[in-house]
Structures are given as C-alpha cells and as structure tokens.
Length: 245
Image 1: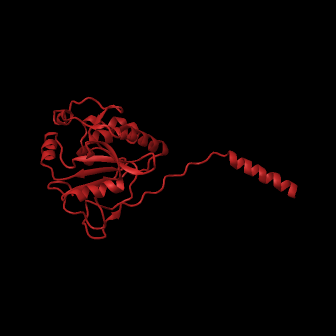
Image 2 (image 1 turned 135 degrees about the vertical axis):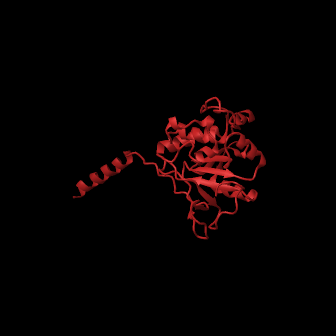
Image 3 (image 1 turned 90 degrees about the vertical axis):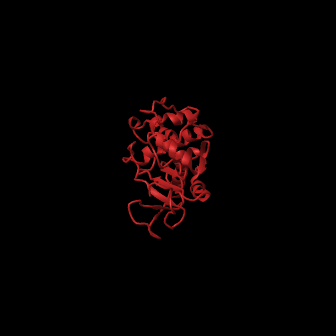
C-alpha cells in the first residue's frame, strides 16, 4: 500500500504545481456614505449604504453664477460636473474626472473625494448612478488602463466649452488619445472605449453632465436612476437652488 500511495501523492503535488494560478477577485469595496431615493420621502435611517462599484457615475453641483450662465447657454443645467468610478492599478476605487478636483484630469480615491466635495461649501450636492451589472475582468482592465493614460491631462479649453452652446454643438469628435477633456466627454469616452455602452449611443463631444443625468444620452439599460448621496446616515442637506433633489 505504501509503494502505491507515495507515487500518487507525488503526482498530485506535481500536478498542482503545474496548474494555472487563478487571479483573486478584487476585494469588496467598503461602504461610503448613504444613497437616498429621490422619489421618496427622506427621513433618518431611510437611505441605503453606498458600496461603490467600477462604472458608477458620480454627478456634482454647487451654487455657481458662472456655471448657471455657461450651462444655460449650452442648453443644460444642474448637475455641472460628472465623473466615473474606476479601479486604479493598485486596486483602489477612484473617481476619474476632468476639471472638478483640479483643472485637469485626476484620479482621486472615492472615499476621500465625495466627503471632501461637500465639506468645502454649503449648498452642494452629489448624485450617483449605480451600474446595474458588474464589469467583466476585461472591461475592468480596459477602464483602468484608459483612465491612467488620461490622468494629468488638461481640462478642455474655454472655446470648446462655449461651442457646446452653439446649434447642434459642432465639435470635433473625441479621440482616446486627445490632450484635453471636458468632464462628460471623458466619461462617455470611457463607456465607449471599454464597451460599457454601445458606441452608437455615445456622442462624447456633444454631451453634458445633465444629458447623462436625465437620459438625453439614454443609459437606462446599464445604470439605475440617479440617487442622492450624503456622507452619513442623515438625509442630504439643502442643495443648490433649482438643482434636482
């Protein structure tokens, strides 16, 4: 019996040594604040903890006379700004955005970015559109690679922003390797390049944050309706005048 068992054990060890190593799935994200359904009454304890996922879209707004005028000219309004959650190469979930954190493309850890935005000034608001289906491994790698290639690029020029207000928005189509990005352009390009949304639906150069918020660029097939974010279990504080709830 011993002469049979020893070769069997040795063969099993050798077999295990030649099997491909399976990559571990990314760790589950910690919860960050609370999400509140915009259609129901808000009351203490009524929200749901927010657990960020790659592909979630994050919208921001605040009191701003300048943005009120500029976005009105562009046929848009609240929210002023949008980013998307990506996983960096170190495995950390970050908000990828252009022009919100600095006047350039930046990757900022989501657990730092959201509370920091509301702490700066009163009457600010954040909304989240959660992705319905988790990204595949290939989509995740693509999104990480694309996001890190954009990190540090400059914000869109003022002429490009002004052209959003012209009839039919006659802007040059976006390219993955361009040197400047408007916030909504960058998010749409992420969705298009990484296959998160059918390319024929996305027109990044003609899209504003409000288009993604209100489904003028219809993303209902892949994202839940916007929910309002608060940093704790208390209902969100008052937001900007005329902004969505």
